[in-house]
Amino acid sequence: MSTTSQRLARIPPGSGVLFFVQMFSTLGYAVLYSSLVLYATEHLRFSAEHASLVMGVFGAFNYGLHLFGGYLGGRFLSNRNLFVGGMLLQVFGCAAIAGGTEALLYWGLALFLTGSGLNVTCLNMMLTQRFAPEDNRREGAFLWNYAGMNVGFFIGFTVAGHFQLSQSYSSLFWFATVGNILAIVLALAFWKVLADLDTPLMKVGAAQFRARFAAGTAILIGLVPLLWWLLQHPEGTESLVKLISAAVALALIVLTLRHRDVPERKRMWAYLVLTLGSLMFWSLYQMAPSGLQLFAVGNVKLELWGVTIAPQWVQNINTVVIVLGGPLLSAWFVRLRARGWPLDVPQQFAASLLLMGLGFLALPLGIHFANAQGQVAFVWLFASYVLQSLGELLISPVGYAMIGRLAPRQYQGVMMGSWMLVTGLASLFAADFSGMVAQPAGSTALTSNPAYAALFTQLGLGSVVVGIALMALIPWLRRLITDETHNSGQRGSAPT
Image (spheres, rainbow, N blue to C red):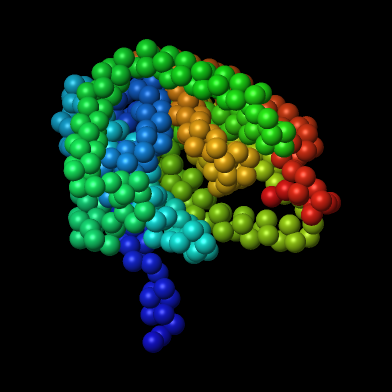
């Protein structure tokens, strides 16, 4: 048997096809993520503020439903069934949005969000179940799956830009259904291979399974009109999510204060501080499909070497940096640690905030050197996205791993859920920031540049200040994170 054949034979059944399922299932989300604000403002004539708010609520629900998806799949419907059902809802959602009216937009978003919000966790659960707990191939499989997701984003952003240049939004959303359908076809073709292997639902009898399946289906269908109503009242929905987030934060603080194990309580405090830093980072990062995209359309000369650049193609800067920079950064970190550099989570969080701040500060500098029409050279936007993406490489991969290290076992589910909630909350703050710059009809780059420059300067400096504060707190955070075992067994080295 050849070396290639031997390697393929060692891949657990189902993990290979999940790479392609991940790639195709990402296409629809990539289209909506990169085009929703442009479609709402250019086709439906929403104000920039209202379109950004809808995008913020879209992101909040998408991330907020992830945790519930794992519960619903593992205990009511099965991950495999919920994934296919969710993809079907995404197909119907994209088809509805292709209808081109405001009423169909809300129904389409409700259908799509119910599907995408719930089935992302199911896909990850199907993959992790292909491996035994001690199987060290799991990390490589998730890296490949992450690559498949980014390939899907790249294709989705590229095609979205092509249709956006010709204002063919209906064709764009019909294209989005193609990726969803292909993901369903692959899942059905490998139905037996993708069966759940170890979930609470598998331990119940046939009658109880049918009862749970019926309840799960009712929940799935019932979420659609609930999201439809909430999407039409984004201001109230935003306030509700922020109130819930504040209550969760207060509950976590109380939980930390009452926790009796001193080393674990210290690590919980470190988690809370680092979570505040991540909230700042993701709030700015998630301005990419809203405020930054509107700035790119109205104030940046989207042209390079005579080629017109679609706004969605700008998002691919992030995709390329992540795909190419991830392995290079990982290898660099290995070399630095081998030389004794104490790279750890607090350092990476602080550096990510500094890079995000510099990325935003590059924009007012570009505005300062804008041409006579007020248009900013594309290179400044390019530099901003590269800096932001490098920051993402530092903070995103370590986020979930950080929870496993800092959260006590009995609180890991709660703290993982709160981490997801932070990402959703950040989407709402990104909408708030994006709506701060009014763009009345007929406004030009020259008239809106001063407001953009002020906003980007304030946000950039804010991120830099928080980054510097985290840098100052690094020794304290290290003392919180480093437990007694680490001190006695690895004295003199930094925690990873």
